[in-house]
Image (cartoon, rainbow over all chains, first blue to last red):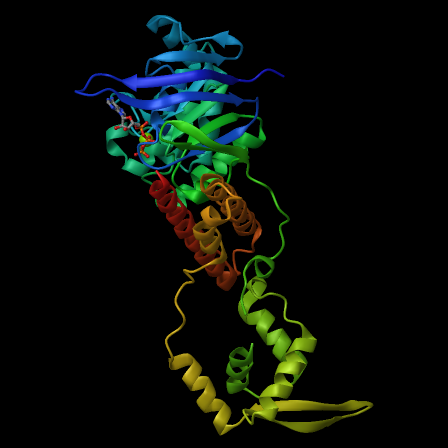
Length: 242
Length: 168
Ligand SMILES: Nc1ncnc2c1ncn2[C@@H]1O[C@H](COP(=O)(O)OP(=O)(O)OP(=O)(O)O)[C@@H](O)[C@H]1O
Ligand SMILES: [Mg+2]
């Protein structure tokens, strides 16, 4: 099988300021279909910059980005927009919900734009909002929701058209423990159904859902390997209680 | 395990097997499955130190069983255990020693050491996550214990990141 996402010597240098900032410095990353990859690293190590480039939100300085066997770093803005609709689900620190549309419409929109039938789009929306405990908020406007609720709506929307890859940056950043649990459960459910996920997070509990960890440091990958699944026993077998 | 048994005996006298059951009931799945042999050995030591005493209770068509109860000295020891401040979290752990000593040996690259440890911690976290998913909702003590272990791991990971920043 071919990788869903591939980068070759990917570089991003921000050159707007007084001195150029090399944020991503030669990243080679390959993500296979169905993989769940966590990206971790200190603040400023280039995590957000990397996933923004993967989603076409930030232009690369040099190197290549491939999505489903298509070279995408050379695409025009409008070609990117089209591709994003079909292939990429986003859930980022800024949510960008459409303010004058209901929660339900916000979640259905991406599927409709991608050409899914209205009936299927509605079913998918009902399923996702249910899984995130948001069914009762379906008719609300985003402005009437708490930060955590908006974040969960953003996740539902990102998953609405079953994208080739879900890109997410701190998916549980504003959430309390109960809402975090809902988001974690949905992420592992869609992962089990085969959803490819690339997720930036500082939260170890969230990261531990992934099968693979990529560690960034100073814009470079310093570690890339599997998060081993060990045996599951009772709590007593894990916790050292003398 | 000594103070745990003293605490259970402070509630009521009991024989060895009852203590095993009481531990299981109190801690749910959180207790590392108490071994009856270990319980008897510990009871023997507590008795020898005068913290508990045993009476033989006759049983029809079975050997006598020993029922243990707390002595005044045992109660004092238990009170002292409860009242004294508990040891803080470990800081000088094995990994830290490796990290500090690695450059002297020339064998290990510290960045690689930190990365490997990070993945190890995450796989421990994954275990804890799995436990939490499968645990009975009523198993409150075990849930709290797992959540505590997760918070400790998160702290260990944050600290790894600090160590890593220091290498730069
Ligand atoms: N628009 C921008 N213009 C200039 N520099 C930027 C811009 N965005 C990010 N940077 C710089 O690029 C580097 C990487 O930033 P990035 O946001 O990717 O880090 P991060 O790993 O996501 O950090 P955090 O964990 O804090 O979110 C940083 O030094 C940052 O200051
Ligand atoms: Mg970021």
